[in-house]
Length: 284
Image (cartoon, rainbow, N blue to C red):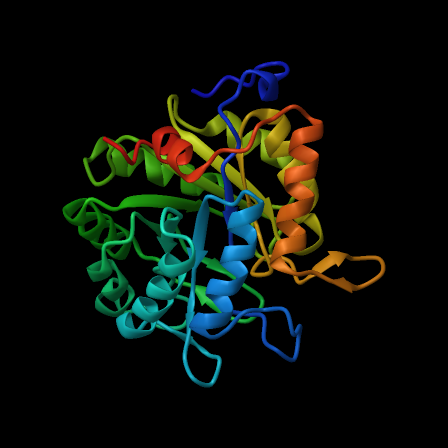
């Protein structure tokens, strides 16, 4: 079991910042700062990369701005990102919120991203359910293993961690394990600090983990993660506002800049892409 240590941030690995720039939900009507086209996404990623982001969590949109699983769209985005940020780590989404068919969700894996998201269970989001039967999770995990892609294990509930442990015991998941804890979405675990502590204390030993809060909880969960020795995910996908009381819209660059500033003030150094690969075990 993971044992939470006092002042973990002072002895922790350098901080991996994952940018989640687009997602499936925000539209240009919600915020002009959500990047939709491959060029817009790559530009936002480049600005965040210069500030310290070493991983990008990619969702693709079609010509109408709607979520798509199409490999061709992902390929355009990946090429644009790699032109500007040749060493950044790309984590592709295999979300089933819009299209639950495994073959469609797994199309992007044919592009061999270094990482890909793998949600460990089903839940209700405000607009779409995320349906992830055990067979689907197993099949996607096998596809990632066969292609040497590191799964980013997305955790929205404590029970999802139990599923990950089970799949590890059965050989569907292999070390190194990397968990992404997402708190505060309607229909999932709430975003109190006690909730984050509970999730972290439930993680298996010798794993890596990052955390974020959805909406107004993003910054507080990011900061708690830094203090607890974890890593962070930040971006417009999870929070369109920089300041919720004032309804101040966020840009991806400003969200990353704030986390870098806070991390440095807490004496937590920022990982480069090369350092992030070592921490995540991508060099093995």
